[in-house]
Picture 1 (tube, helix red, strand yellow):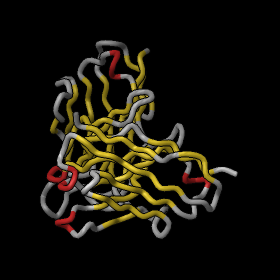
Picture 2: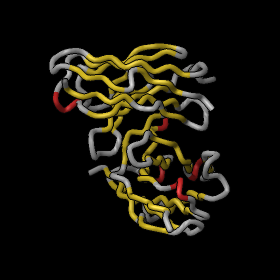
Picture 3: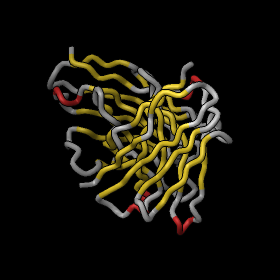
Picture 4: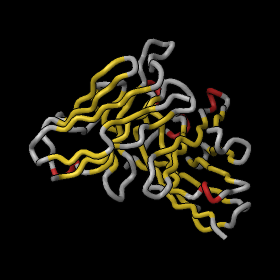
Length: 112
Length: 121
């Protein structure tokens, strides 16, 4: 199974300041079709997960442009340019390149 | 409105069975691969399994932790997916989410609110 490792596991951030989350996979996420199926999900307290980013860097419909994704191969990053109060929650990276699909442990973003 | 609504959760004894339902609306269910993901309290997300569409012979695939015990099915006439859980263990206690796969992007774009399953004596 592909292991997804996120760092940090907790990220206290000042409102209006940037936040960055790293996600590393135990093997390349490049699919045989040439795509890299790495997505980022946000889970606000008491809510189901919500898709933010798909295929490394594509923002899903309705996602604010302060969220951005980057990376390649085995190393990926989610950045929030200016943290807003509604960004509090847990963020997960997920690989859908190889079954079983796997998630990172989650990174908790909280306000200082 | 696009939505998924899970139901059927509850308290069950170890070794027991439970069947979850996931009712879809607002999108073309029959053309959508459906997955189940679970989350133990205070823990991360775990992929459980998936069912493809009729075009792909309703093929199913499961996580090793549930293979042989859980069965995913669907009824496209009712816009509903199911998760039949047998031989339940205490470690199956979790919130179970159904989610739609946005096929061309291999991403979960629609999530239900989840249904709680507690396995305890």
